[in-house]
Amino acid sequence: MSQAQEAETGPRRNGSRKRGPADPVRGLMHRHRELCAEAVDPLEIVAGLEAQGVTDRVAAGFRHRDVFSLAEELYARVPRAVAPAPAGPSAHRPSLLPTLLPPAVCAAAAWALGVLPPLVVAAVAVPLLLLALPAALRRGPLSVPYGTGPGGALWTCWLVVFWLYGPRAADGFAGGVLPAADAAELTALALSLAPAAWCAHRFATAARGHLLRSRTLEEFGGAVRPLLAGTLALFLAAVLTLLCAARAVVGAPLAPAALAGPAALALLLFTARLLAVHGHPDPAAIGTGLACAVEAVALTADLLHRFPLAPAAIPALACTAAALALAAHALTTLSRASAHTTAAAPR
Image (cartoon, rainbow, N blue to C red; front, top):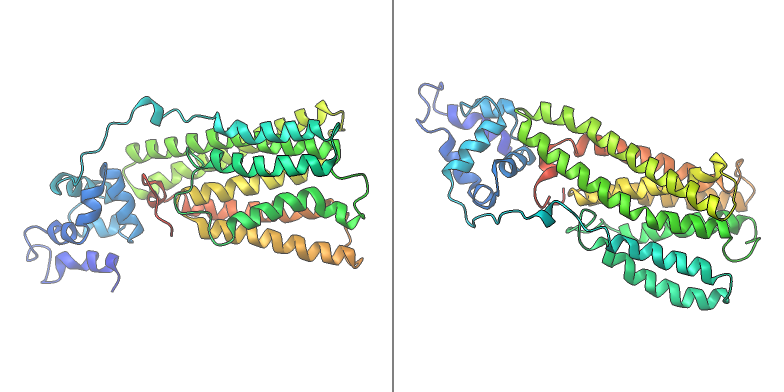
């Protein structure tokens, strides 16, 4: 019997509700004592109970109208293990300065390509970028305490490298090591870390606000789904703005086909990161891994002259399909209260 079923039947195990125990919540309180003792507020208990399958219907078995009311009683009755520290202003204003380090490295490398040999630039820029990226992602709204899932970092590297060099590999690497337009777009994608961090922080803060205002899990989910859709759309708009600005700086045409690939890549990586941030790293890794597999198969088919589309369409199609799939998954998983604990555990 699951914990939710046990919770639902527990108060009535000895007969009707009138003949049941005088304190039906006591058993639930003991089963979830650690959760209740470590919770910083009743919302943490709501999220934990929902993760265990406790719904509003189950809460009714404990003489409560919903999970929120049940969590408030549990929070009031179980002593706190540690008094929660008050949140200071810095907790609500994430620093975006670390997210500017990777684009600074990319911009410097793009400029250096015009005056230095490409191998020299790569030898200096790649190690600096490998140091700047962890510094930008280790803390703040984009940090993932439980990792990015199996192979997550590898899939991310593949997607970026394939976007840069995959289509050109099919064309025999014509046009030098890295065209100016690609270098500018790479800098724009690196610069999108700042709006990504801001959008992730905005989503997390607004979702917690909806937890405070909602009285049922269904009401909370109905409020968070459009919030998530708006967050993804806002990030995509920011990325397109940066890409257009980058191409305009180097004098490249603003063709929609040229913007589709990097925009889809950015949306895929942001959606995957958002899932990992909220305790769902495995689906994020699966989504990005499948995009890598599609790209590898499509590139092989193109090299064998079996792919009907232009090589530049490969990353756009693969990343768009994976981004839409992950977005659909996120609309379900991130609309649950259990995805918005202070430190969401991986599920």
